[in-house]
Length: 315
Ligand code: 5GP
Image (tube, rainbow, N blue to C red; front, side):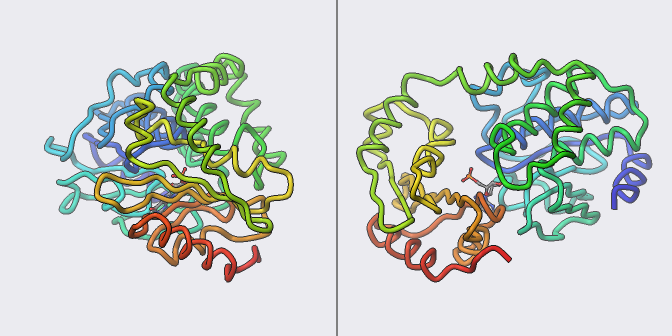
């Protein structure tokens, strides 16, 4: 798996790296770090993302070199797709006929590429990039460490989500020793919100509903416009719902311009929300998943809640 990936990389020279649309900290951090690993191996590498780098991740090393595009046009020998279970989720055209390498840690990860390294035991794709760097024997720079620490910190919910264990902290220790500054990384992400995001949070909390141990909320297109909020400002709003003591599961619905809904699901561990999301064509992890469903809003809410009620417990 890891050896296959490394072998394929060694045989090629020019790489394009990408991840899913609406990239989160693990998508950005692991892509930026992997790009640095490849460059340290003497390869040419570019990171291309459909949505570019969200505001809170723009201070990451080399984030300013990320290319925003709708299609991959360059002359590359291979594309490395990180933290993403399909070409479709990258929202990029021009990947279809290329040699594809997938590096992913989702339980819902599918082997869609020519070489697939999927490890659901890794707490973040960043952890896998760390192992790749180790195996490749590349020198480990503070910039790589900063990108990987950010991937680890965000995908473990600041070292709080299920799956965080002694290995997670051992890896964090390695990254800090290599030059990642924990308080700087945390400050850049958690104390860097826009005013629009905070206003949107207010709207979302006003729409809060609970039923038994399930809580949900939503924001409409109109509310987003009123708050001057962007798509990326919705990241993490679902966690405010999950923070309510008596809830086990939280859902957040964002109305899309075409009337469909983007859904974020979170669980404290008793219900497997990856399976709920997969039922709607999405995916993710047992405790954090997402999908898109048809509108209107109230119908979508009802369908998702029904599925949560019927949902399978964590094995
Ligand atoms: P979020 O709710 O933050 O968008 O996503 C939570 C987790 O579920 C992330 O790991 C994300 O990659 C995954 N996820 C979200 N939406 C989708 C989707 O539509 N398809 C798949 N396969 N995974 C998703």
